[in-house]
Image 1 (cartoon, rainbow over the protein chains, first blue to last red):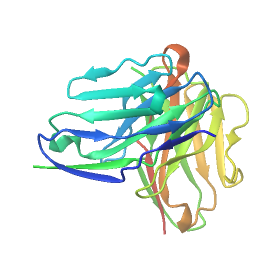
Image 2 (cartoon, each protein chain N blue to C red):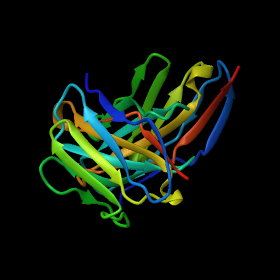
Image 3 (tube, helix red, strand yellow):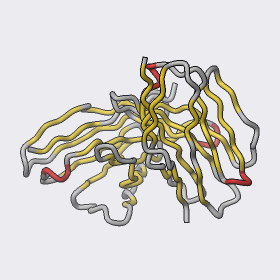
Amino acid sequence: AQKVTQAQTEISVVEKEDVTLDCVYETRDTTYYLFWYKQPPSGELVFLIRRNSFDEQNEISGRYSWNFQKSTSSFNFTITASQVVDSAVYFCALLTNTDKLIFGTGTRLQVFP
Amino acid sequence: GAVVSQHPSRVICKSGTSVKIECRSLDFQATTMFWYRQFPKQSLMLMATSNEGSKATYEQGVEKDKFLINHASLTLSTLTVTSAHPEDSSFYICSARWGAGANVLTFGAGSRLTVL
């Protein structure tokens, strides 16, 4: 079965705090892709990152970083020095050879000034 | 590049009417587009896969006669909600593949449907 679990429903932090959003996935496929998307209050989905199953290197992009660990089937997302503009719902998603993108339930992040 | 345009962004209609939502790939050709539905504060659920020039593939539990999908060209897919009812009120989002390996999905901005 293919599944994505985002156990954190809501997280609230104060500006400048670091925050990590957890994502755990399940698949029996050896080739798959993991994604993170941001959905601000306006509703559109913003692509943040794609990672394929053969690339376990962590990635950093500005204040964003991702930790992919196949051993624990996790693909966690960390925002460093959070800002109010980071407030949004963040979705982790899995794409396997079924050709269907499966989303987690999302984590709502609120960053307070 | 890789922009998907969705129209309308918001639509309000009376119960029993039909509503059409368009999804266009603006700067690339998309042989496959996907339609998702999102209820308030919930995740995105895949409704159907739209294939250019052939019938759409619907997910289990999605009524194909209720949600008509047409993908007549490489840049346009439409979703028609027929005889809409209040329970069809939702946020509908389309997406299309782009990029090397075609495994990155670009999403439209979504269409919020409210059925009175």
